Length: 110
Image (tube, rainbow, N blue to C red; front, side, top):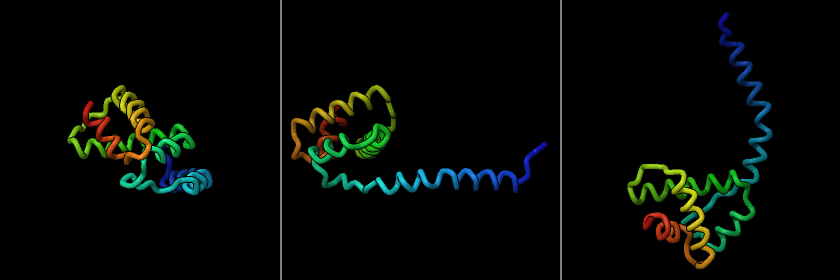
């Protein structure tokens, strides 16, 4: 027997009600990041205080930014891990550098 539209709608609504507090709490913790002005030192400090999930999202954003700059449309997971490590090392050595400049220096030259 196929579920009715009303049954499906009620299930979706119930799921949203259950998930809403968790999503709201997560949104309350999130802050916008101005990648054009953040320094490597600030970036590393923020990453050290972030969850692994949030840090992963940030690294994926930076990878997407670099893809737009370079035209590279391939996501290679091993390269992303290497890039993340190299970016952290670069930023550790040059804390006053802008993080996007560091990302370009490390990521596009790979």
